[in-house]
Image 1 (cartoon, one colour):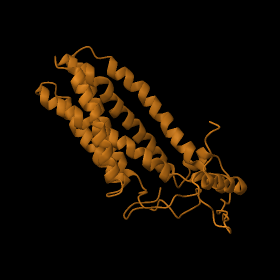
Image 2: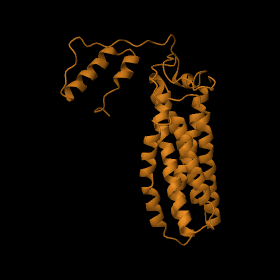
Image 3: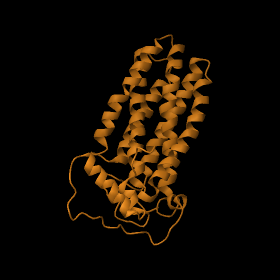
Image 4: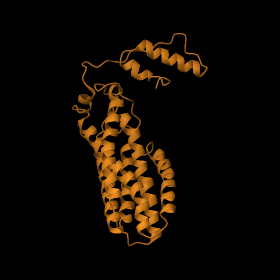
Length: 264
């Protein structure tokens, strides 16, 4: 994508100060502002040793966080895409209007995103994920009881899909914040790769159902995945709300532990 510019922060951290200044000057020009005449960048502290991105993510400091994030991304895709895939099929077995339910549950994603946007800066990233996953798991559990009235099942589908999407969006906030600049893109990409594996699995779970009871069993799997996501969220050792971003894995200025947590 030649029309995209590199992050000045990343350029500075990797030692390309001249290029970082060029990007900032370009940004100033595009925004019709002037940089101070004595403007200069201060080179950030460089790590004492160079190591691979994977070794950074699985090092002593970030190992637990990385493994938990892989689990969270896996659970998010299972619960969210599972509900998205199975909802039309599930309600067609109920002899209801699956198109209306699918439309309503899709629209429910909007309040789910709004709620997450509000909560991440109020109660923190970890607790927001736990709340949204728990709400989604509870609603999806109700949805698995296919003998309930159609209206109740519809409401459960709406709450479930909006909540699990909110938790998914929170992950897109938390994951880049918890990783240092030098390994941020690699860490996010690796989490996304794990999520793709979950996407392959959930496709088979969702579309292999031939009756209402089988579809209800699939919904129960998605409920378990959402509750697992809530548990994993509270196990994360770092809260990133209000913290400065780290430049490298030796920077201790960001991502401090919450009271009572142990360093991984």
